[in-house]
Amino acid sequence: MKTSCRSKSSLSSKMRIEAFALQIFCLVSAHGAIADQAARILQFSTSRMEMQCHHQDSKVHRRSHIDHAMKVSPQDGMKEADKVSELPGQPGRALFDQYAGYVTVNSTSGKALFYYFAEAAEDPSTKPLVLWLNGGPGCSSLGGAMLEIGPFFVNSDNRTLSTNKYAWNNVANMLFLESPAGVGFSYSNTTSDYNNTGDSSTATDSYTFLVNWLERFPEYKGRDFFITGESYGGHYIPQLANTILSNNKITNAPFINLKGVAIGNAYLDDNTNTRATMDYFWTHAMISREAHQAVQKNCSFNGTYTGGCRTAITAANMELGIIDPYNIYASVCWNASNPQELHGMAANTDPCALYYIQTYLNNPEVQRALHANTTGLKRPWTDCSDIITPENWKDAPVSMLPSIRRLISSEVSTWLYSGDVDSVCPVTSTQYSLDLLGLPTNSSWRSWYSDDDQVGGYVIGYKGLVFATVRGAGHMVPTYQPRRALTLFSSFLQGKLPPE
Image 1 (cartoon, rainbow, N blue to C red):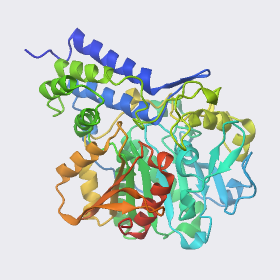
Image 2 (image 1 turned 180 degrees about the vertical axis):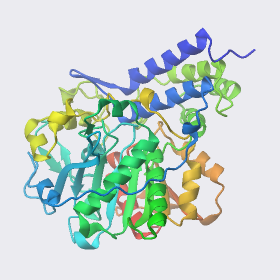
Image 3 (image 1 turned 120 degrees about the vertical axis):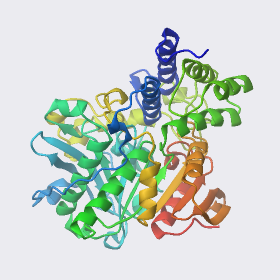
């Protein structure tokens, strides 16, 4: 007889899952824990499992896209005010222009979203405009810039910057948006906004941000526009893209000239992701045969999580040990105050980098250079918000696959890519989602190569969608494989499969 979802054992299972996630995914330093994108998506997944277990079936959770009218405000003089002359600790004069500041998306509540913009290093007038969105929900795209694809990285001294050789502004004009309000430097003067956040309001505000930002930077109106991101960007990106398409149809003009979307290690479907994670653990020798068989026996992955299923998942998780879920072969940061105390640091990857970024972005001199409104913020910058959490996230579709189908039918170039050593949103999850989409194959599975003549991963072309893996990359692909990530990104922008 199966245990009821509401039983005592079920609730204790939830607490054990959450405690385990916090134990292994909130990396501990002498200065305390930093919530990261992997921990956040795991917390979100756990809360979704609890919601489904209790059969909460609000229609708002089933919404798959949002339509909103444009709200444009005067932006005269604001571009010049947002110009960043130089970031503290910057290694010499940048060969590109940088901007940072706020776009108000709701003047009544005083809601303002923060952005950082790095123009292309060469010929920005000929390069596309690309929006990057980190996931969470509730994690910072500015953090993504400084950890993954932006022009600069923060050094271990917490004060100086180094140049990112494989920055994506080598090939595009890169716009990083901290969304929703309550994330990073973004804020609202009405605190109740923080408790009324979800997929719908995030898409609304991001769209409002874009149309006003384009008024501030009119030279980018009509420019080829792409949206990229990762993780919970699997929700953010399709919903924003469909909002753009819907409003373009309303205005009968491509106000935002959307050409394509690319999502890395995407969180697309609640049930698929949970099943795929358990299968990934088993196929990578991380859990025992018995643990995997118990999950298979007790879990149907159809939206209902019984007590027996939750117990089996908890038992499987407990076998993992303390690992970095972003990259199952990397090491965790044990002591950020003493970088020498790293246990087997992965090549070219510093597991304590988030601590350097947090310290740097909370430096008043840095905040002044970025035009951050610390008076309105009333809290320190963190990579993932402590006020935008899975528990107060109001709406999210169970599956984003209907939104992906809409993009494909609208002939928007749609790419999904997966670092193959991520266990948070593993490659198996994307593959299972592709099975559900059931798209015909246009180009057979093959290897692709980066410019060092090494296999960068594998790629397959479907009708309307490209799926690529990145060999040796974790949850945040550019962090672990920057050269391969830039090759893949360049191919995406060019609309062709990565090189053979």
